[in-house]
Length: 321
Image 1: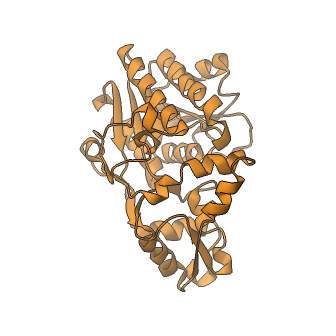
Image 2: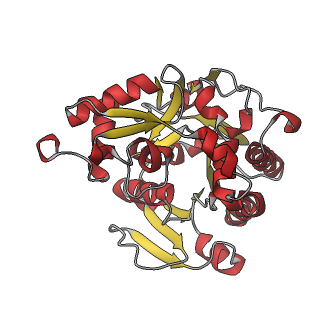
């Protein structure tokens, strides 16, 4: 497909996923409209900044005119999910519907609840509301809304992935917990080292959004696509980190007991503690539908991806760069 005449609107372009997706579309030759509340994005060539609040319907609807794809990369603070996540998702639906564009939405594994099975494919059922967390219920509600919008003609794809690492910025378990003290020779892993956990290298995931956008004519209704990324144990991840930095590192765990005591007084710790099960239950993503849609799903070898992530965080010794 000739992308030179294709235009995408990224809602939440200054967020971690939003920036990665914005840059990936620009590299692929798309014209990109990058919505942000604050200017000064330092965008690459081909990116037009749209300065407005994402919930300003007049501005976002105007920006969406003539676009073929809308990416909803809006993500509220972890403590604001219950009040902001669904309205932000609704705005993405409204904007894409008004423009007659395909909507791409980033999904996660919260939908499957605390008893999630180890292998999550695109047909795995979501947990019932009563068996899910507050954030999981919100995620399920969002995807139900996408299904409802499909009955009104909206074509969308939820691209589900595991925890992010890599790319610019900080804000994930990888950089805020696991390698936070790597410069001091220490890593912290939030769960048992023998449990498989789903990870997504953000540059690969961003390229996948571009690939899905370019294959949009093969989409219909509200599609669910799984980005496999890496399903690796904590031990495998930490060995990969040690291999990149070229030395053994001290290993620690999360102080979950102390965090439990603090949850009544700290909303952020309470929100984090609710999702502890993701480190206790082994899980990974399988993506047959995505495999069938794309000629090749982007996949950087784990060791190379870890090197890129640590370099972006300025955590590599000079000889390892």
